Amino acid sequence: MFTFLELLPVWYQYTLVGLLGLIIGSFLNVVIYRYHTGKSLNGHSHCLSCGNTLRWYELFPLVSYLFLRGKCRVCGCAIPVRYFLVEFTTAGLFLLMFMQFSFGLPLLLSMLLVSVLMVVAVYDIYHMVIPDELVVTMSVLAVVYYVLEYGFTWNTTAFLSHAGAALGAFLFYGGLWLVSKGRWIGFGDAKLAIPLGFILGAPAVYSFIVFSFWIGAIVSLLILGFTALVRIIKAHYAFGMVVNYSKYFTMKSEVPFAPFMIAAFLLVYMYHVSAIALIASFI
Image 1 (cartoon, rainbow, N blue to C red):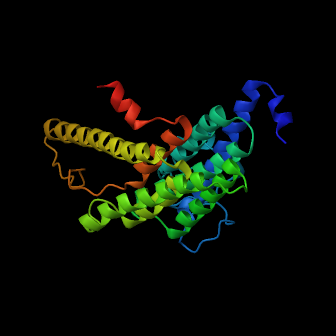
Image 2: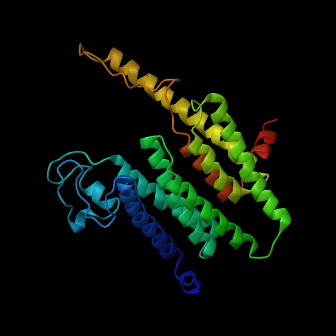
Image 3: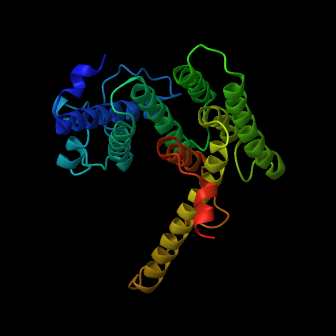
């Protein structure tokens, strides 16, 4: 099915996959912006400030953002950097998936997984919630993954491994949600852990859980450090100006956890990194 693509030069294959990632990323931006707003995905793209309909040459992923220097051509208002980051990240993940799976059904499934997870991550960052529809979509993709992996032949051991991993991940995150009464983690995160855990199976789900907290801790510390640096700079170099910025990130700030879970999942899914082996290498 994909033999003709494999005959193309390697650089051409990477270019095709990267361009596909940019195009899909551009579409995901539309989905993220219009999801649960009642707006159709078929509507014309427009400036969020002045409502000006974008011309065809302003719709090229990444290129248009850079050419316009991140501003609307008509009103000059800033275009959210999210558009650039989603397109760039989607293309990068598509290329990483291609390096791992090459052309084939596993690659197509992986691209679908990345696309849905990108929407989940960004939506959670902006709204602090994970829509049930996206969790259901991930669950369907998890079943498709299982079928591609094991076929339609019943394998009790394999099924119990994946089902047990899904249940274990849900109980762990769900337990944190229950104990903290939603302060540490959201119930949507626990539900998202079901399809992610089912795809990974046991014992990889353990690494997924561990890495999600490691990544969360590292990112949170980096943000805390950056915030502290900004406060110091503003306090010492304000040159007499009044400094009144109350939205600093602190230890009590709410942080969306789904992006950390997704990053951990992709790490284990693509590279099969083991937390146990990693810990053992430092002992």
